[in-house]
Length: 232
Image (tube, rainbow, N blue to C red; front, side, top):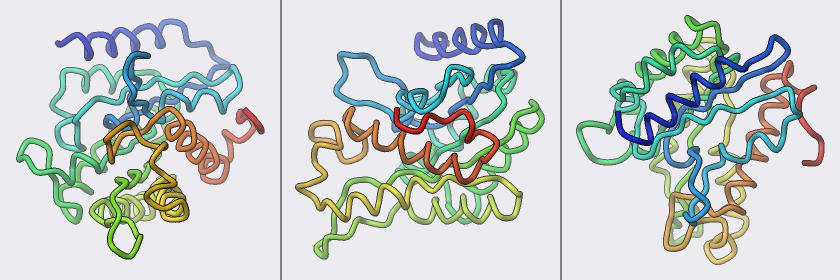
């Protein structure tokens, strides 16, 4: 197991050992748009700021892994460890790497991607957690008409369909981020992303995305609303 996965596995063990009966643990599964970055890295994942929106009774376990899709995440050495967590909720976000080229991670949004989502949903429920799907934030790539490119929308649509069919809450981060990017335009949204990057957030952008996720949680997962902070 490489160093990053070993650290994440240690985090799972630590959270499981210190969790209290009155604590709520939210586990984040996804890619580099979620993950926690070192302070020296200009990139930030929205998952590293989500805890700011909750009171002290909620703990966030960030299991985002760079470069992973809904397919390749399940091949990591971390996957068996993740399934053994004592989390109450799994927030599951994939799509960026599912849309990329490469046999080891690319998936068809109409077939393999939904099948993979159902594997995550089943694993969450088997562990005793409530699965929640998070649609992937769009890449900051603009077309000539000022609208964003659409390469991730089929994956967002698949999540909404599976959520409706399998009674799983869906947090529509894709729609929230898309509306903001198109409102601000290419120049106005530049500081939301890491330098020379169209997929990964700056701290400002990641904080905004975390706020969107918290707002979606308030509506889609009402039992968590009492744990949310009004003005973090």
